[in-house]
Amino acid sequence: MENNVKRFDKLLTKDKTALLIIDIQERIIRVINEYEAVVENTLKLVKGFKALGIPIYYTEQYPKGLGPTVESIQNELEGNEAIQKLSFSCSGAGDLFNELKKNGISQVVVCGVETHVCVQQTVLDLITNDFQVNLAADAVSSRRVKDYEISLSRMGQQGADVTTAEAILFELLNVCGTDTFKQISKIVK
Image (cartoon, rainbow, N blue to C red; front, side, top):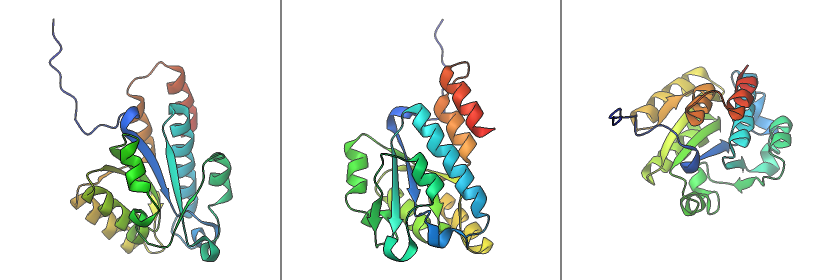
């Protein structure tokens, strides 16, 4: 008997996805609303993506002024090199967008700060360049709640899938009962 059940065509798949962490840096993070949750949920994504074997990229906005990426995240990213930028959008972060395309990435999971500046401009540019964007709403934030809320709404209206870190990880898993499922389950607890 043939299975005619369709699945939502925008579900994340391991072979087409990458994680992009935007500017979670020492000198700005402490003024960000609910920054502890942003760091905690970003770490869940990093650990989950590592368990799943999915590529991770991260940027630093003007590190001379804003400092390096938060230490706990940097430690988890050992071996990954920060992409430094001066432009707010990651479209200006070297050859990042072209590298994603060259590596067969069409779905980009985004987290970072600030939601209404670097994150929003990056998300809109990713969409314009034909990437599917999944935004981890619990792993992004701004200094002010209003900026965060309005930019989440705007990005959603422009085609970003607004979701959560845990939902992203289980979407990428697809099934339970595997060793990777057990790893991810421990990460999100």
